[in-house]
Image 1 (tube, rainbow, N blue to C red):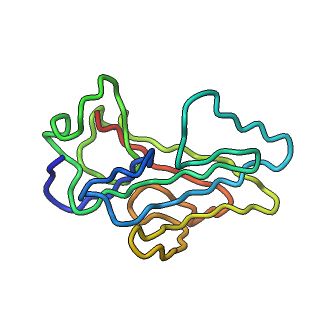
Image 2: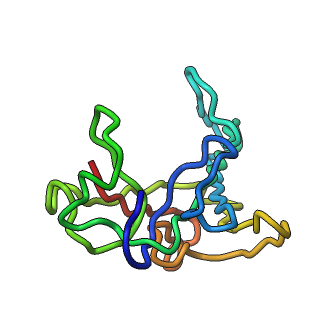
Image 3: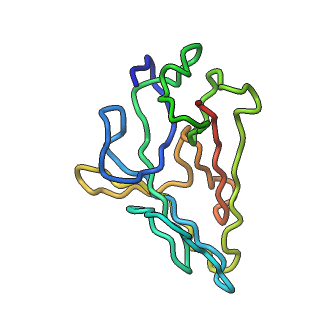
Length: 156
């Protein structure tokens, strides 16, 4: 993708390949799921390097940096994968599908002894930075640290 100005969105990390548009750090979002009668299941496939077990789910994200979400040429800038898809982010540029192309996804995490975590790991130094939100990139626990809200934008 070749876009023009600063952007803010996240892509789920499904391997170690990254482009120059990705920040030199990985964001980790840990969901402390229900402690009693938890039924987390991965039916098939490989989530790596993400993890899922009976205690919770850890998802890793690449943050896209230095470029902007496409406006008029959005369809040309995001690859055609043969199906509709989106990214996590809070950008306000025109979105394919208009208002129908924007939404939120909220997780109801463990209520007692919640151990949710949100932090980034610098890809070069391994320095860890804890946060309550990924500023502008669509992951937020600021007002409700025991639950997680993702902003979703359709791009294709």
